[in-house]
Amino acid sequence: MKSLTILTATLLSAGAALADVSYDHMEVGQPGTAAEVDRTIAVRMYETEAGEYLYDPRDLAITAGETIQFDIVNEGENPHEFLLDTLAKNAQHMKLMAEFPEMEHDEPNGVKLEPGAKGSIIWTFANTGSFEFACLMPGHYEAGMSSPVTVNAPIALPDATLAEAVFTKGTIKKIDEKAGKVTIIHEELVDLEMPAMTMVFVLGDASMFAQLEVGKEIEFTAARANGKLTVTALR
Ligand SMILES: [Cu+2]
Image (cartoon, rainbow, N blue to C red; front, top):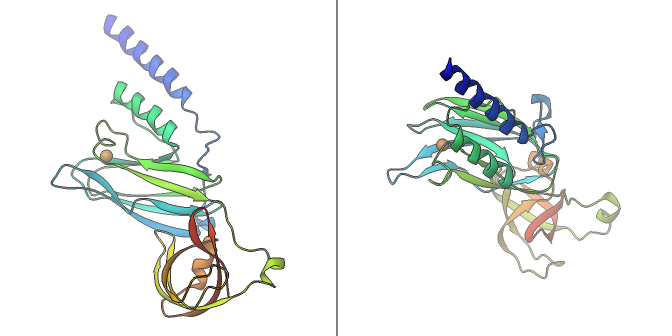
């Protein structure tokens, strides 16, 4: 009887603590539907011989409003998680997991995968800001298992501005949709006072990916936004 009382008390305090981590209105966004998916990003969870636990890719750039399907595979020998949140929420959650290692989650912003298992999350990033995905299993974050996710405001030019914009000719050399980047061999960028060269840009609006293919000749405008050279319009 005594052990039952202790068990009940533990469950109650775990429940109370969990209630503090509210997922009703998440800063990072909300679950999306298959019909809304703008981009699919394949994520590997893996381990190195040096004892690191890592994600590939890491450091993702996303445009606010984008719905991403994350296709996640655990290639490691340990179970791992993929939990999207603010750094503060993940840190708070990690503390809880250290206290209650038996905690199992069923939250829309995360998935836990056994070795060899695959899972998917469809997520709509509603707000700009700095977020992360991380594995909060004890010791895993410290072993390297986190990745920044930067959500930028869309900065495609409005139609009125477009009429006066100076378009530059370029050829698509490489597309890295996972990282949200495109490499363009371009002529002189008059607005930026930049001579002709080959450069990596981020896209002002992720929907532009649909218009791109390697080798395609484009005309585009670019600007410096959020500290990055950004394609603001395409034609
Ligand atoms: Cu892990």
